[in-house]
Image (cartoon, rainbow, N blue to C red; front, side, top):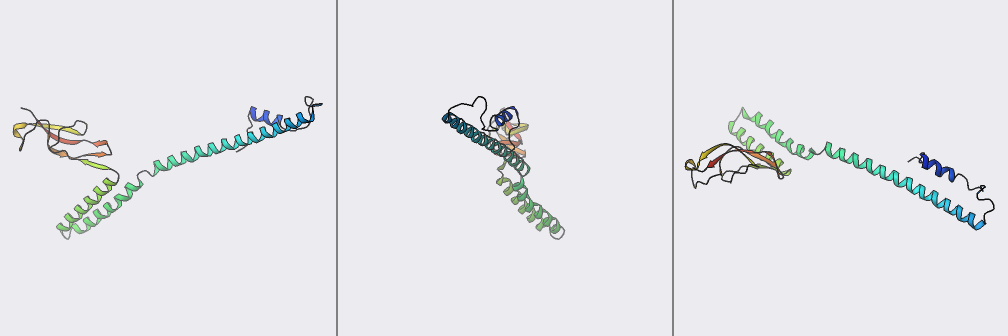
Amino acid sequence: MEPDTGPQGQAFEAANDGLAPTPATEGAPPDLLAELEAARRKAAENYDLYLRARAELENARRRAAEEVAKVQKYAIESFAESLIPVADSLERALEASAADPEKLREGVQITLKQLLAAFEKVRLTEINPVGQRFDPHRHQAVSTVPVAEVEGAPVPNHVVAVLQKGWMIADRVLRPALVIVSRGT
């Protein structure tokens, strides 16, 4: 880092330019002049340490900013890598579909397993709440049915059917499950 050229830096440099006697120091006792010279050296040393610390701080800030930019740029890299085999499986399934429909079904099942494994790596989980109590934070009711129409042990305000699964990442809902909910009579 370059020396401080601001008013403080210029004043410091001017005060320490030479240790030659000045009108203020002429005739001063030699031990006092030696003390003054030692103080000036110590001040110069401290100023140098200050400049180095300031440069180190600026470098640390720059490196931190670069690291944040890098993390943002490549945040989904591992997730993207886990999706590549899914794409490969879909391509193979399409190639095999003309020859044997059963192979297509097997290929799609394998692909779904790979996709769910990729989701699991990034803590992406499905919301499939059949039989659970309706939760407006995780479920979106699109319809209700009377309890009397529900098979089994009818319980009001519970999910009786899922029209579309929901998805969560960690504890955050990405898409609520679209559900049909039982209601009291």
